[in-house]
Image (cartoon, rainbow, N blue to C red; front, side):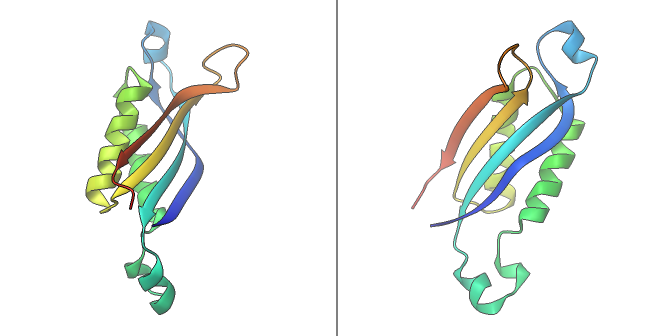
Length: 118
């Protein structure tokens, strides 16, 4: 299995459980690794034969910026379902973080893997 990835995609959204968090937009950052097979795209140089990271990024930016979640866990699950179902990805690893959410820490968040890795 090959991996197409996106690193440090930052999107502003409403996220958090505290009242003040519901009134401001905060930045979330994600790293996404998606299992795929790049051989067809490599041999044809046809963008239609690959997992287009720009299309994935645009879809996730749109979804995240328009959403409001209480927990990063819920957002991570929703993101994973979009990627798995809409982009025909069999496996993914997602790191979703809230930079600056905890004093003294660069960021906090979750790492999840979904699907079957072959």
